[in-house]
Amino acid sequence: MSVRPTALDRSATVLVAGSSGLVGSAVVRRLRAEGFTSVVGIRSTDVDLTDERATLAHLRLLRPAVVVDAAARVGGIAANDAEPVEFLADNLRIQTNLFAAAHAADVDRLLFLGSSCIYPKHAPQPIPESALLTGPLEETNSAYAIAKIAGVIAVQSYRRQYGRRWICAMPTNVYGPGDTFDPARSHVLPALLQRFHTARAEGAGEVVVWGSGTPRREFVHVDDLAAACLHLLDHYDDPAPVNVGVGEDLSIAELARLVADAVGFTGRISWDTGRPDGTPRKLLDVSRLRATGWRPRIGLPEGIRDTLGWYVEHVAAPAGAGGSRRGG
Ligand code: GFB
Image (tube, rainbow, N blue to C red; front, top):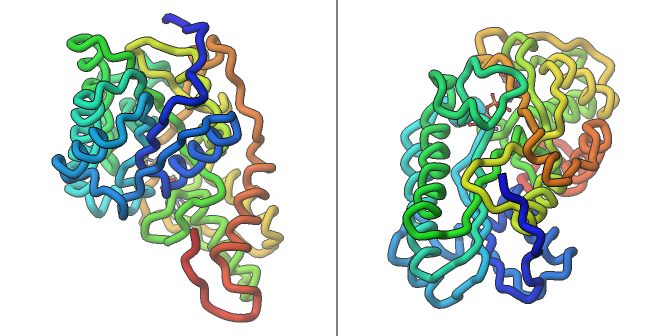
């Protein structure tokens, strides 16, 4: 592993693909807070990254020095399970087009965001980066995982064949302000925040949570992930991907209890075991990231409170008004 001592030039143009998403918007906030003066976002409504020509034209015009690829079709276990064709094809198209355009525009530094689901279903825990491609994937998200694995191989290939100083970060399950709360697409943490909040507002005595409650997950707050991305762009230049996590996990049952307490729900929690559990455990080995000198700052209880505050302000209807609206 090589650690670069020189940080990015704060006046360089940085392009953040996927800037309206959970991760992309946090990366934009972080770059601006760190003094970057030329930060440009691409939202899916600005440029369709599944369109090769449009992507190429946009990057040739903009000529960024740095690209952060946070553009992807993402979703929780249900969306991944229901739409494997789109999770595979759209993500392959987005990253293939963006990488080709970045290469054509001579982009020196690029950070590709993958996912902890690239690792085998039964990988050793905590999961080291070396576990990649050592065993079968979890079925509920294998299409998305294959697309993200292809992204890692593509970045490594651009490095090897063209000398590009591009890197890959593999975040664990991400959450935070700006998350998706639509139950058909959301990940577990925002899904539970919404369900427990609604149950409390409506005075319900029971909340049903998917699966058995036994799977274990690790959660990184999106502001910590954004900070880690910039840290890696400043200090890391190696083909090996870097796991981004917090080093601790908990069961879905423990998470449900934490969320219920944060929301003030005192009723019963029951389990819908007809819903898939997915991977039994996903705890990342974060020693490579730690060796670069980076540590997360936001603990899970604090992060849940922060996300709840955002949800109440931006998404939930005021208590008693009935209904809800999408925010963000
Ligand atoms: O967050 P989640 O959808 O993603 O689900 P994965 C995590 C666990 O929470 C699973 C359970 O065991 C779910 O069954 N769970 C309980 C719920 N209640 C709910 C609920 O209401 N909604 C959701 N969504 N889950 C995704 C992958 O896997 O993680 C993606 O499908 C990606 O590809 C992402 O890698 C980070 O951790 O199982």
